[in-house]
Length: 209
Image (cartoon, rainbow, N blue to C red; front, side):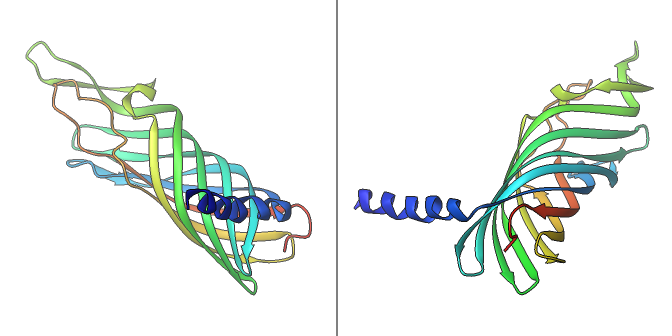
């Protein structure tokens, strides 16, 4: 039984590779960090670039794995702080894609690995002698402040403008807490999650069907 199931799975994922259509893509990220109590979040504009292949499975259904360099983050502001976060990720979405005429919809999981992070603006930098927080304007690496792994769900729609070109939009919603620090007073910071709206253009090599 297990051997038969393995054969079926290999048939589903290996046969379509012969029909796989490679492509490149890139576009705009509009990102924010959600979930932090006591601070308001706002969106910032970043970017993403990547490669993908579309493996046709059955009729209008395809599987589309991708590898992207994607920048997320956003602005956080409280009564005492006002700073930007810039998080650089290597992301791997694995999407199911359904195409009907020129319109397609896509959805699936995304796995991300944090490559680097930076923070800039008014931040807590130390504790005063009386134990109260001290703030200052800084620009600093912050990779250690965030967890290396990020797991998200992706959903989007798009339009094929020609046989090889398409435009699309996606929502990438982070599911896990990416915050990995305690603040300088020793109190755990609240959860942080990525939220990214993506607009992109894509080009497929080959016939683009």
